[in-house]
Length: 115
Length: 114
Image (cartoon, rainbow over all chains, first blue to last red; front, side, top):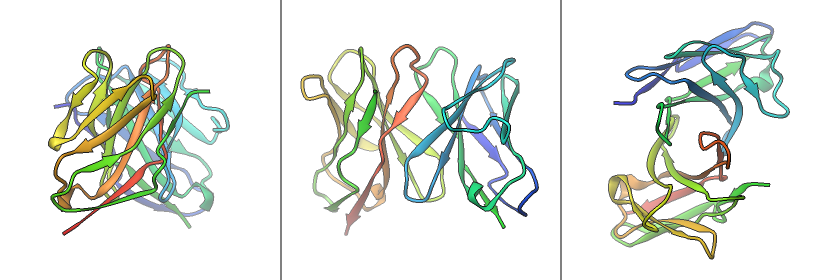
């Protein structure tokens, strides 16, 4: 139980285009989901907190107009990287919080490469 | 400011030997502490957590961690390492006032040699 999926697992896009990454909790409802970014051989950097039915809360230094987050249902959050640039290339990981639990369940990550 | 430190970039250990991956934290209030493991190009897998209660916490795959309040540490341990334990390990602390929001350490790469 408590499985989180991400789609796609890998995506290559051209500079200037937008790409959407989906995060789904497959067998539980998640009021809260988180989006992280991980640089090579580095730790996870929290980008934003996604709450179902409300606006996402972004961490300091994260551009909300560039990284659009939509948490439209209790099982789905999406991250859209708008007007992507090569410096947006990274490994993006989402997590979902099982309601009533202290644990975050992490997705397998999405490797974004912007050419 | 709340933070987590993992002082070692890499830990090398021979298979069958005990392993320790160090973690210290700085938070206000009572900490919620976690260990996660990450395999290449994968998301994080939960290993164990400390919320309250016994200082020694047992988790997945034979790992355990000891919460030491006086030393503000939460070191990860395993009595006998396996080659398959080789991975990247992250210590994390949940921020006070919102246990869901995690701050991660920089990560420690564990290399277990046959």
